[in-house]
Length: 315
Image 1 (cartoon, rainbow, N blue to C red):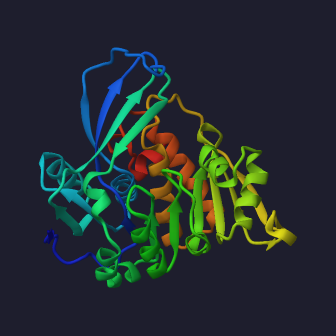
Image 2 (tube, rainbow, N blue to C red; image 1 turned 60 degrees about the vertical axis):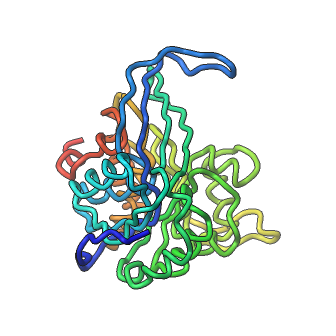
């Protein structure tokens, strides 16, 4: 295994993304199959994806200086992923080639842009705590480190410990150790991920308070076309049930015709991380990120759909 010679990092960095890079295998379907059912779909399309790579490209396309720490396979999909990231100016000095297949995401997209996704992690599962520690100087150099959970949890925790500010997107949703929760600023979840972490669904405002009571420094719940809810500050109530006195704010989203929601959450998180790195308050950063997410659903694919700053300003 060798580290890719991506040249010296561009300093100062805005965001370091520690996460996955996958090849997205996408099929359009008229409806999603029921268990045991077969449906016919469109021709197979292959796009660069993965939550880590998506967030890196989303931020870079908006103008952020971004580096990606992760692993790809020494295969055709790995070459596709590298070429895509390089085109958008992402620093690849810490993207490692791995003697395993690159990660794959199998995506079925319905007629309303809704999707179902199965991920085979491949090389992403080989990212280790040692890989992260070897890149400690890189992580400490950026105002924000953006994290997701398509890579092993020990690597995520190691990166969060080194980060000046850790933004964690709880996707795919898994239970988190208290130490990692306490390092999140913010913890970013959608409604389904919030319900899994809390054990039950609920109203977004209350979910945000209950999530804040679990220990993160701030929380963002994304609501798709309805924007997001942001919670920060306050004290944990007796028994740790609800964070009392915290500020909960609703963030609207522009109304657009959704073509494909694949990767929209990553576009949101990448944009959020960049604006936080620029020093914006969380609510303002989330409002900008909601506009980026809305712009992304207007085109098919994940990275292919991500907007430039000019497109966001024109939304």
